[in-house]
Length: 409
Image (cartoon, rainbow, N blue to C red):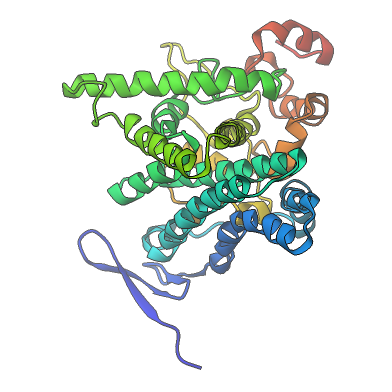
């Protein structure tokens, strides 16, 4: 067997700071860390590829009901796998984190997902545009394409959009463009991270708020906040808002060109499919935002500002399979407290508000508000010590919820 490749990782001063041997990192003190999850990030590439499975089964059987099978995998099998595989609470030693984040392997994994997602989106468009499907088959493709390109695509845009390199920032714009969600990095980085877990944040759900009501508040609110932030940035730089300097218009032009090309090649019947996929993909981000901060509240300080964002201001999940499938998105507590950390180095913390399943299982529960409230309200009250001052309430439902649960002031 040939020896494993030895890689030297250097810092900005070109000094050797560690040795990496296929995922084995040695810190300055000599502590060795083996990243056992290293090959498992492949799941983040394989799961989005399931968009091809439904059509392949359709070609093999001629039965449009097979198009629903990948959705069964997403919303039923993955939550079951999370229950069976369990949770991972391990953390990399802090002294090897700079080396772990410098390892290009993890960046290449995110780069590799970009063509997969673009291909999945275009394949879904081609398949629907060239096959006479019954309505339920058309609907299955809307949900499948929107789920994959929304959940995986916006998540990838989230991971890349937080980074400082021009390549990663542009890849974020490209992967978000088919969904018409190019404003997301601005809104998320400069707006949501600033206002998270406060009543001012349209992307933080409130106790008693259904996901459907939240979507009507969050989707337009996110766009308007992004536009205001970008207009403010351009004004400070002396640049016109309506120009190519506008980082919302840049991906929007890609969206328009892509949608126009699809319609030109496949016909006007693609308009409702494009619109439906776009709306469902929007709901995937809305679903993530809904479960990530439900009812959690940062305290306002005497000077009128809010306390610094801490890990307990986000719901966390260490369920292994869905974390492998989402580049650790579900370790959201560490991400909001330390947004510059890359996905491979995000940490578990004790005593955090914790979701009972991974995101895919929680998304499904959230679509049935009575079930969501039954599962999550008690967990929220437990974390908030049953005190109203620790909860971000739906304003119109606050008094009723306080009476229902006998919440203390």
